[in-house]
Length: 249
Ligand code: BGC
Image (cartoon, rainbow, N blue to C red; front, side):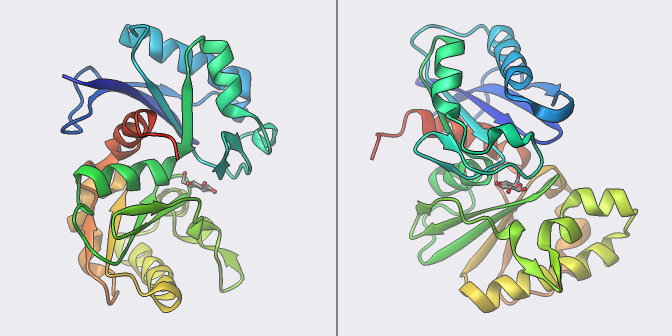
């Protein structure tokens, strides 16, 4: 069985597991540790190291890491819910050096999209599929005929004078104590705006709250169908592991 470690760094928690690359199944415990206050690179590194140690990493086993920022050429370029030190930071190189193991880094929503296009809800769907993750922020992945177009950042769209993710992420629902009806009307505004711009065939929705999809999907009025991420909140872990073994472009 071909396996890799996937690690999903989020604004709230850092999660990791060993993944069967043929099926996307987790073949170890899923280890989760709270993101250290401020999410500074050395503190995040310590948690990643702890997760790798807990999972009992083998030397030749690839490790993929996803992160809530734009990632180009192994550098993190933005930092919405993490320390500003990650802006223009050589993250691939830093983690590779410190962990003593080649690491490949990818945006968290792109990792989830890659998993869903490879083995999940977006597999075999032609045209444009947009995956969004509803968590601390809103992440997005564009999948065109199954191919990932990275770093789309739809959570940073400005809608009605505010960043979409500040108003409509799951953290906004929790912070403001919104009912699912109230939250769904904000999500309708977001998804209809995205539809006006990009006309996707399908929306795939991930993030922790996607496991409660029956409570709010029916309340969202969007033209394109909405489906939950097949891998729910593990899509980032699974996509990172798959990404680690993807042939380099
Ligand atoms: C970041 C994205 C990320 C999303 C979900 C946003 O704040 O800008 O890069 O994908 O949060 O974590």
